[in-house]
Image (cartoon, rainbow, N blue to C red; front, side, top):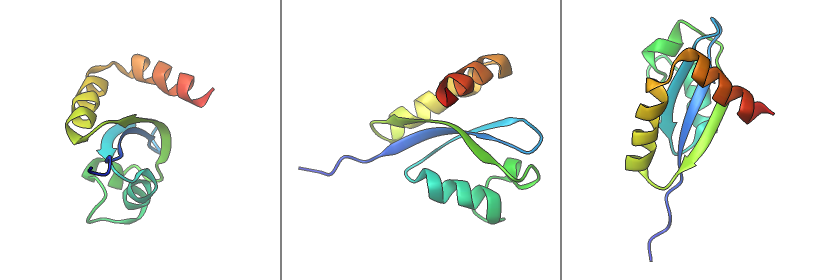
Length: 89
């Protein structure tokens, strides 16, 4: 029996109030990379630091996480903000 993998889809709030969406197996590590590392942090977030976690959800596997990431990226900023505010309540 294989160990279930924990994948997450997350949205970050950047310093310029924009939103960045990504997938990872470790949200805390990824958040630190976005804020501190120029090599492993995303190019988009490097110039928009600091970033903070605004939303996250679990996924069954990487494929599902990537599919959900794609869905979230298709949302308008207003729709993403609604999702984030519901998560923070």
